[in-house]
Length: 147
Image 1 (tube, one colour):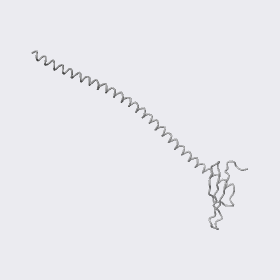
Image 2 (cartoon, one colour):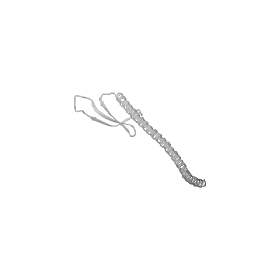
Image 3 (cartoon, helix red, strand yellow):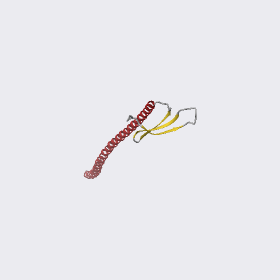
Image 4 (cartoon, one colour):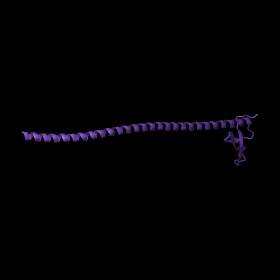
């Protein structure tokens, strides 16, 4: 019986270094760990190697590759969460700044209206002062003629 968690080799390629002294051959094993997830392993294969040992070596390498893959996915997830947090923080800051801008614009309009009222009052007061000054001058002249 085969172990269901052990990946099945999908292809096997052997390349010979050209040296006849060396009995070992460098082979590439492609294992499909999950559908769509294939791992290429380079292994100096000894034809006399125990199949259990080979299975353990391949299994360990597959586990290490899966671990590295999971670590990369974890890091990618953390980066994505960090970006999302930064975006949400920036959005909240933009919303606060927008609300503050609207509040300041309302305050600016109120101040402009208040200043327009003061200017109107100043102009009317200025006209009244000029009228009173003219009346005082007239009364002074009249008093000077009476004396």
